[in-house]
Amino acid sequence: MEINSLLAYINRIVVLTPTEENILREKVILRKYLKDQYIVQQGDVCKYVNFIIKGCTKNFYMSNDGQEHIVMFSIEDWWTSDMGSFITQTPADYNIQCLENTELIQLTYTILEELYIEIPKLERCFRKITERALVASQKRIVRNFSKTAKERYLIFKDSYPKIEQRIPQYMIASYLGITKEFLSKIKSQLAHNM
Image 1 (cartoon, rainbow, N blue to C red):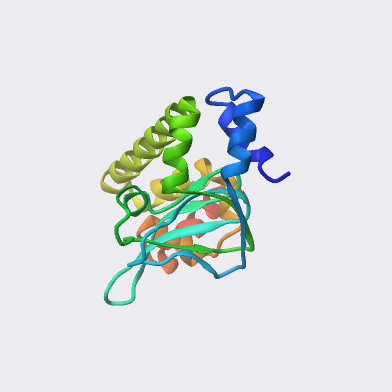
Image 2 (tube, rainbow, N blue to C red):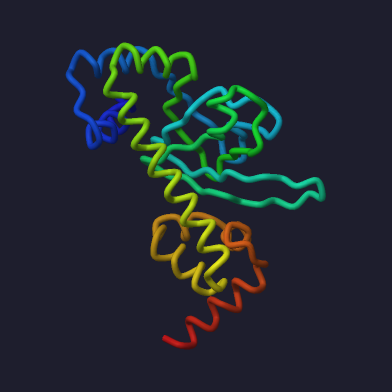
């Protein structure tokens, strides 16, 4: 069943008993989205925290002038959500859109809170996941202030080798905070130096 990838992920952080696994199985929602479909739209309340079984998504902010600012990509065995909206149940700052046909395991806020009571070790698990996400976010902010575009691209390429081949170059450029033309120039320089 599709939930096995989620159970394997959780069991790398905390070990669930067969009974706890069955409780979790009964509470999750399995959902499929088509390429280009939105999981969350800016301004709507984020109803789910999403674990990706298959597919690829982007989290982005759309500014008033129509500029897309990509803040995150997510692939298999990763989580995606507008956590600020999900936790506070207020309108989302970000859009989450599928870049491929995507299969997810979803948990609502209420169900997640129930699971924390029924399976206390899940609260520790999600705390660890949230801590990792916070650290990654803070490191990215520092990189954006302290590294050149070329250095940021090399870090992205090394950190996420499975993502680069799956998404268009203009989206990588948006994630890096540069134009697609400048990214092409960086890639050309790197190819020339090899």
